[in-house]
Amino acid sequence: MKKIFWTTVFWLVLIFLFRSYLRLFDKDLWVEIWSRFGRTNTVCVTANTWQTAIDEQLNVIQTQLDIISQKIEKWNNSEYLNDNGLSTSTPTDVKLFYFNQKEDQKLPIWQQINIDSILPVTRTIAKSNNIIQDTINQLIQWSITNSEKDKWFMTEFPNRNFQLVSSELKADWTLILEFTEVPGFTDGWSARMLILANSISKTAMQFPQVRRVQFIPNTLFQP
View (cartoon, helix red, strand yellow):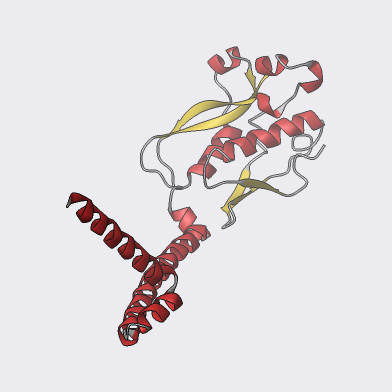
């Protein structure tokens, strides 16, 4: 008796799974099979209901994609970027990148004056309307501390004639920095130019809104 019971259950489950497969993945075969039993109208109704349900789900998915697309477009808008994440009302720790001679001397002599030797020190900005711009200003206007000098940090900042004129964060994540051009300071020895340019770039790119840095005028930091 038990054998008959479990055999019946097995065949019922098998039929149910086969029927579900046909309804979901092979509607044409489903219609053909059920038409032989005079169930064509029922099958058509079922197929139409199934199609309607799919259409409703696709509409929901499309609506969600539209919402995501709008959020991405808003995030990529430079005005949105400037209003979100650049202003701070509480003390914020930032990094200023300076050349460290001791770390550089650990490298083989042919690899020295390396941008990997430009390392961070920490400063705190109390509050800011534009944290990126204020951080760059701190980098070029403040000298390093005595304790940082003891750790072999060095810099040619500040130079009273070298000033940040403007900064603009583009929608493509490019930060455009315009500086005053100072003959003899913003040009010269190639290794020195490498350090100055990358000190600024590394400091700017600590912020997630910045992926590229462009200097104006384009003659800045040229050997």
